Image (cartoon, rainbow, N blue to C red; front, side):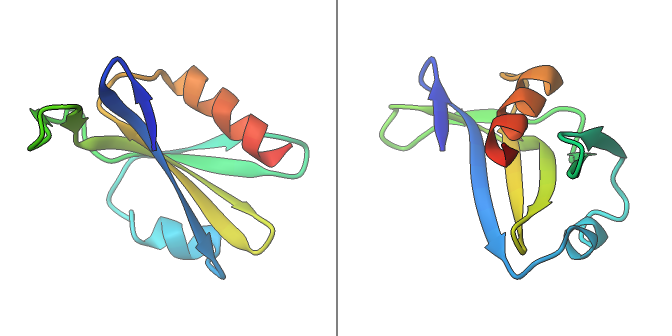
Length: 103
């Protein structure tokens, strides 16, 4: 989990044994676009919802917003899912983070 200004910014999940095709099937009704991360790796940016709502955590330390996007990458026999929380990170920033993960 990544934080910025006391807000959850993004969450990275590793899913061993999963394929990009299997993961994309879970989001069949969502808008998707291909993202080239390297010569060998193309990910898929999935729009989960247009807007999400936010709330404070029970201990009032961080603000948590609904995930609005996920960038899915298949590498080394697993899927890496980068979930973005709210609108606190741009698509470009998300893609740069993903490129760092696949290098």
